[in-house]
Length: 241
Image 1 (cartoon, one colour):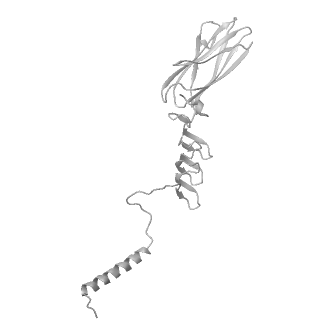
Image 2 (cartoon, rainbow, N blue to C red; image 1 turned 60 degrees about the horizontal axis):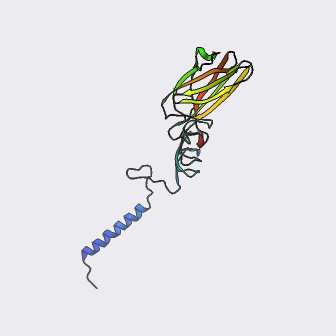
Image 3 (cartoon, rainbow, N blue to C red; image 1 turned 90 degrees about the horizontal axis):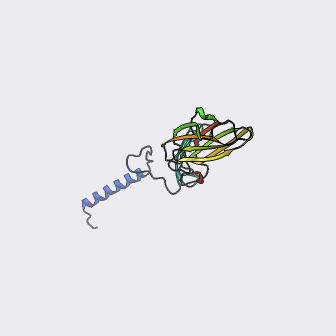
């Protein structure tokens, strides 16, 4: 019978003990409630969810159903609260804040990267003593100012002209005339809406003026300013260039 050194037998016994320990540890389920070092990666189309006991998702991160990569926070009753991404326009990666009824109450703009989309910002306008005039000299009827937040300007104006009178009306900002038209309703009102991309950058101060004058006939004209606000873009063509 060959001689087996005692230290080799000890080594074999030690290896057997280590194998048994490894087998036992392999059967133990590790506690996965902490990440103490390193990264957790969600990739290749996956998503990470946090759910209530009732199955409502309150946190989502990963690739969205629209194909972009985003983040979502929800309320425990099931409504969205804040989302980043999940866009039909996947390049926009819009940030949206949602009401409990499902309306977007705050967001950046889909087509104008520098601007706020919602909420719309009203621009208050004040009348002057020349709100009505019989002069042929161009005079300022309304004035107002704001800081630009949204990318599209909208306003509505109506001008009264007596019979036989034609009026010129125009809206200006700091860069000059935005739009100009003729009001010629006989003893009536000419209504005008303006929708234009804003002509300055985000958060810049802008002054606005509505001017008018008589260009033919004799009589007193009056211009009413019905409202002005800025809003989000509806199409890419509305974005400021």
